[in-house]
Figure 1 (spheres, rainbow, N blue to C red):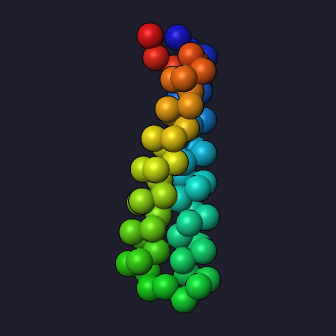
Figure 2: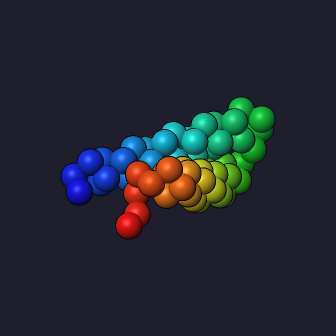
Length: 63
Protein backbone atom coordinates (compact mmCIF):
# COMPACT_ATOMS: atom_id res chain seq x y z
CA UNK A 1 0.00 0.00 0.00
CA UNK A 2 2.78 2.40 0.84
CA UNK A 3 4.49 1.85 -2.51
CA UNK A 4 1.28 2.62 -4.43
CA UNK A 5 0.87 5.92 -2.62
CA UNK A 6 4.47 6.74 -3.51
CA UNK A 7 3.64 6.21 -7.19
CA UNK A 8 0.62 8.50 -6.91
CA UNK A 9 2.79 11.20 -5.32
CA UNK A 10 5.29 10.81 -8.18
CA UNK A 11 2.43 11.15 -10.69
CA UNK A 12 1.25 14.37 -9.05
CA UNK A 13 4.80 15.76 -9.04
CA UNK A 14 5.26 14.91 -12.73
CA UNK A 15 1.97 16.66 -13.53
CA UNK A 16 3.04 19.72 -11.51
CA UNK A 17 6.34 19.88 -13.39
CA UNK A 18 4.47 19.65 -16.71
CA UNK A 19 2.15 22.46 -15.59
CA UNK A 20 5.11 24.63 -14.59
CA UNK A 21 6.79 24.09 -17.94
CA UNK A 22 3.54 24.86 -19.76
CA UNK A 23 3.16 28.10 -17.82
CA UNK A 24 6.76 29.12 -18.43
CA UNK A 25 6.43 28.50 -22.16
CA UNK A 26 3.31 30.69 -22.21
CA UNK A 27 5.11 33.51 -20.39
CA UNK A 28 8.19 33.26 -22.64
CA UNK A 29 5.98 33.47 -25.73
CA UNK A 30 4.54 36.72 -24.42
CA UNK A 31 1.36 35.52 -22.75
CA UNK A 32 -0.32 37.31 -19.88
CA UNK A 33 -0.21 35.85 -16.36
CA UNK A 34 -3.88 34.80 -16.52
CA UNK A 35 -3.20 32.90 -19.72
CA UNK A 36 -0.17 31.27 -18.12
CA UNK A 37 -2.35 30.18 -15.19
CA UNK A 38 -4.97 28.70 -17.52
CA UNK A 39 -2.29 26.88 -19.49
CA UNK A 40 -0.81 25.52 -16.26
CA UNK A 41 -4.17 24.26 -15.02
CA UNK A 42 -4.98 22.64 -18.35
CA UNK A 43 -1.56 21.02 -18.57
CA UNK A 44 -1.77 19.80 -14.97
CA UNK A 45 -5.14 18.11 -15.44
CA UNK A 46 -4.11 16.55 -18.73
CA UNK A 47 -0.76 15.31 -17.46
CA UNK A 48 -2.22 13.93 -14.23
CA UNK A 49 -4.94 12.09 -16.12
CA UNK A 50 -2.41 10.69 -18.57
CA UNK A 51 0.13 9.60 -15.95
CA UNK A 52 -2.48 8.00 -13.70
CA UNK A 53 -4.07 6.32 -16.72
CA UNK A 54 -0.75 4.79 -17.71
CA UNK A 55 -0.15 3.65 -14.13
CA UNK A 56 -3.60 2.00 -14.02
CA UNK A 57 -2.92 0.24 -17.31
CA UNK A 58 0.41 -1.02 -16.01
CA UNK A 59 -1.25 -2.21 -12.82
CA UNK A 60 0.79 0.00 -10.53
CA UNK A 61 -2.21 1.88 -9.13
CA UNK A 62 -5.75 0.64 -8.68
CA UNK A 63 -7.32 -2.60 -7.62
